[in-house]
Length: 321
Image (tube, rainbow, N blue to C red; front, side):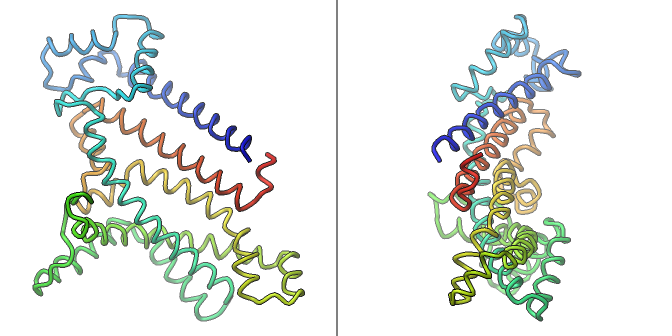
């Protein structure tokens, strides 16, 4: 088990190393990077600022020296400086990351519980009225764009409720947990539901298909022949094996979501990583874009390492690979 996790961690470190090389090539070496200093300094930068940026980044030195300077900064938590905002990129990301993390974790818990439970019940009651109902609902929400669902929820639970004198949910913005826990929760309920309903639909179908395959396995028939209760057969034997593809998909989805839920954050006006990335692209704030790419990549890598660890717990056979 320990060797398995060590290999996964080392693989994750290697992936991040490759990501840094690719990011450096794209932004510092590739086409369109002829005047890196001016691009990093921003559209309104003065010649003095451009010269200062070039000096700080060692752009007059060989490429390998520039890359080592870039990598050394990342290793020391230095993601660059945003001349558009006039502050370090780490400061901007520290403000945005808790927003996206709150959105991602809350929605992930809802969609995982909702998707797995509905998928299990749908598989156990295969071809029943419940199964068909869950299938229709899953296809409905899976085909609905998240921004449409978000706008519908805002129209009903914010606009219509406000007209009726009911003020349960804010229309936009974000309140930090440390400032006011109740307002933090109220502001996240609608974004959580928006992401959870769209994602839960995929997990319902994935869990249902996996459970149907597992329920036909020989060891499940053996467990039933031994006289074990149906509840124990389903939740102690079948579900554990059926969750392996679900856990794999969950790691990918959660990692990507932590990297920035662009559409949902934009609809609800939440200043998270996705919202910040859209603004940075519009302002051509290259240091912030680079910082978000690195953070998003790291989130995907960490999420997959954690999933691999949990995967090994669910299926001991993977520890041998």
